[in-house]
Length: 438
Ligand code: LLP
Image 1: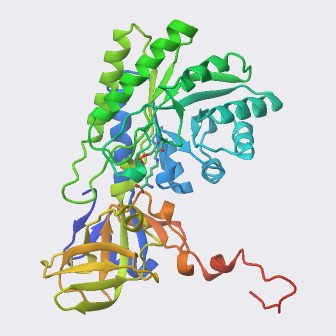
Image 2: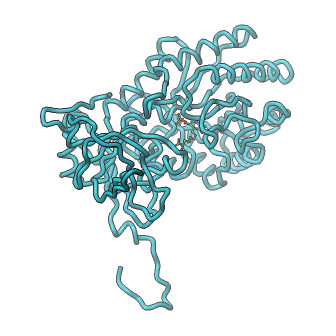
Image 3: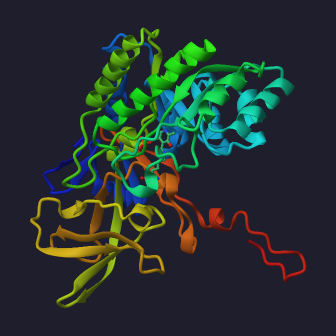
């Protein structure tokens, strides 16, 4: 998919770059990202909205993969940016991302983060709960600013997805409850808060969702609430944000819809529901993360040791693992892989791909069919663009890999491989201990 293909030498090529060359030049593990495909996904969202003639914002959920070069792409593609921490905000600002297009999310923004975002004059806070509402108002008052907010509500919609990543049900740490009246009371309270401008409402029903029904149900809940708020409080929402969660294909059997279908289902549902109530058409915002970057990423590893347990399984170990991709260990996520240096050879054996961390749970793939694997082969795991680098760790003091963007035969490092210096950079040996030079 994307610009990936198998070249004449039988090597996997991405963005016009032979992965064997990338391995030689940058080493492994290596995150390779197909820049053209990232931009294509951005455009699919933006174009699908443009075609509707409605007012919209597509905010890239930067948690999926937040580095400065990515923020540049998001800006160039005319999108907004969703951040959830001071670190993501800092990255965006340092990358010169226009603050008015930044939305700040999270269920526990600290006073420091709120202050930092107000100083930067970001576009909007997505306020998650009552404590935060008052905190934002107080900090805005101190700084003599008025800030835009959306309220995040829990729509009580459960998307068909892995339990750990569904956030739309009522028993959730996120958002104001619709059913018990806490969302309604929050809208009431805003009238008393002079430094808050309420733009509208936000709902996020989960992640890696394939069906459109969840979004349609969420729109249903949102319009019901908007109508109640209008008739009882005279407040009209000008923005409706339906969150992210649009699924991608990791393995066979995953059946996401094309991006445009999600946009179409959402816009149609908003148009239908809001006109039914004769409600002024709001701006529609969404926040895709995974579906912008997920399928653009491929991780290249070098095969090291292997171990055949006859009649049971063959373990093939690579030079990375849960430190660069914790998703299989965390969520039992599944991935596909191929030998990038022998991409034209047929499958010969079914093996399981192990990482190099000192724990049994560090497995990347159970059962994948590959040509007979040798030490030194390059294993390419696909669809690692989202929540891989973003969730990488230094467990076992393993250095985080480099990230390269490939496009039209060029490869640019966008994140350097960590150094040993990075590893011990923040370590301090207390002065009462024997001093060593770092
Ligand atoms: N908006 C909100 C409020 C969110 O909480 C999220 C994701 C998104 C947008 C973007 O969702 P996406 O389009 O990427 O599905 N670490 C997990 C995923 C956690 C998603 C958290 N929220 C994983 O690796 O699957």
